[in-house]
Length: 274
Image (cartoon, rainbow, N blue to C red; front, side, top):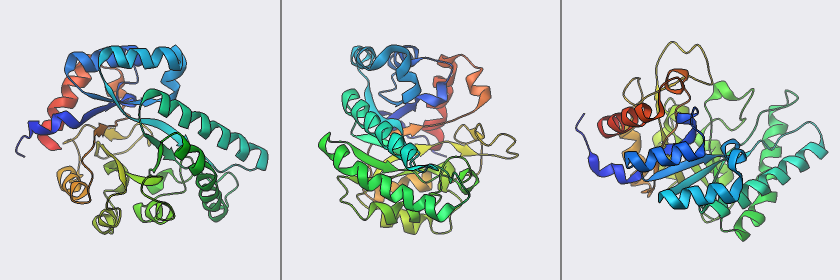
């Protein structure tokens, strides 16, 4: 593939790619590697707290592409669903404080095998969260996950499902996040990307290779698998998205590697394959 260095201005490190680093290490690493964006995971905020985390980001000159994650709406009891909603409100506040207008939603699994009811709870949770998020200027990005994660992470497993929910709201309130690892297999992928026109809030890249022996840490570096990443990226652009592109890779080999080596590999693969 031809290399395209012009895209580097959109490159964002999704923090899970360098799970071995805390937020300060990741921010300094990005600044040194000239990676202009970072996506922050909430468990990384806990180390320094929101105020110090915000200062770290400001001092390194980075832009925050998104906060991961909100969601996890379904629960077996009404009390727990209320607690989940409260946690989502805290996530909205954190996103606004960090200077990003995108909260990524991983919507949650079925706690009691009733997948239809859990999808209803997802819809209700988003409906309850929208006014609060809008008051903070934060948009909710529904990220559909690959169907293999339906049992433990999300009952929203296709871009079509995510679009259907998002279309109940304005694009300034709710949109979708397109992660190539989760959607590349979908026969309706390009139809659904076009359907999401002006409603795509994030684009995540990695790759899919076999065999998959650990579903959580299954992702590979771009170019190491079968996904038509560049084709998907161009479709997302045609649908109106021209924002940061997050490299989001859960992989133990990368986590065992020095973070600066991961960033170099990430940049090289990004230029060649995204």
